[in-house]
Length: 252
Ligand code: PGA
Image (cartoon, rainbow, N blue to C red):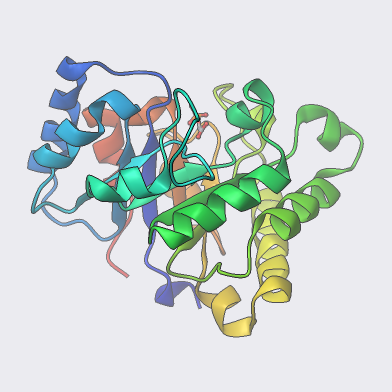
């Protein structure tokens, strides 16, 4: 079953990177010969256009880290999905826990944003995951069920949607759930996708793992059943690290 899903390695630069940092993208573009996965780099908004120019005709896709749920209008400081599509961006991360917490994004709002991104033909990486407290309270599955069921719109399919399971307590901490825990949650998410869509879509939709993915643990994580790639934060900022993670995806 795994063989049919092409793995994806996505880098989330968060609020990091200036023009000089684009050299990292050039190095990724120039040093990978055999790439067996989809590669997406999501730099901050200021770098999107230049990053897009740098990766032209290469295997790298450039994605954004957020978009507004409306197409245009009086929304100071916001960028819409159609504006991203207009400059050739084909992917957007939505529902990241940092935005849920720091920008008070609700699951209902994330649902609207995903609908907007689908209407602009963007592939949406939808982040879900439990907090440390949820985990301690044995609420992990309930939290993930609520996030997946309530945020995925009817338009979600295996082409326009990728789920990223990111336990909040694992982000930027160096802590990672056990292999068994990750496989159990990914399987659970796949069962939820089946409920929302259908068996065929659930089989084909990719589920990434995110949270302290590193050059050291990537091979093990990427080989787990139902793990179809990784959403990488800190280790995506340097080409040398990100290249090693991309290379951990072997020919299937
Ligand atoms: P990290 O971040 O790899 O630095 O833990 C992952 C993320 O927040 O997407």
